[in-house]
Length: 210
Image (cartoon, rainbow, N blue to C red; front, top):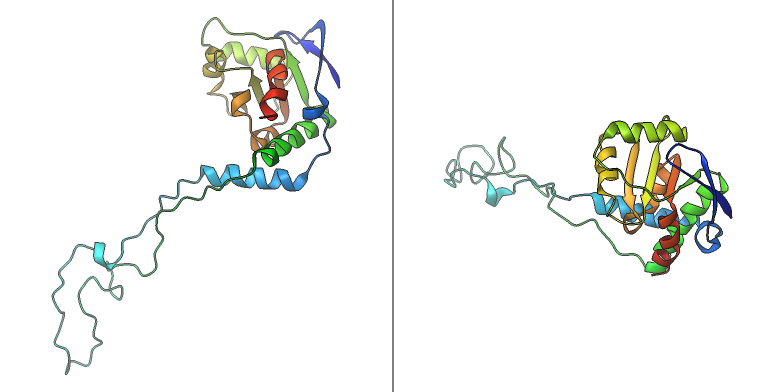
């Protein structure tokens, strides 16, 4: 698939770039996408939920009343789960929700998501660029020139050296800037428009082949 290269003003530069079929022209595998998105969301969970059990509650362990003759149950101490402020029975404990996936499956999922974007003509390719200074206004102007102001966009850069571009965009709610190494299926599918630099296109095929 061949696509025209744009500059920051949204005008065609006259150059064209060939999107590799192994990345943007595969038969999408919905199950691979499902598993990769499921893993991505699971890895975001902190798993720090915790409740105190009986042995972690601060309180006296004195027996509340004598064993027999009071007509009450044998509650033991004030830390019993039967009382307010007592320990919780079978409460949540910290855990790790992450799980592993085969590398080839993850590559297939990302190629499938990119292929969906290509099929829907939701991909723009920009010539490699960088900002001289960190200015959100500059990034907003770039989006306006590309006519994607109202879209949720994902800009993929070749590497992390374009730090000014990332810092200029991070206050914008509908915008996300990542490098090829950070590319994931969830972000690709969640974006309305996928914007790639020419350098990112060149490194994508190699990155997904790993």
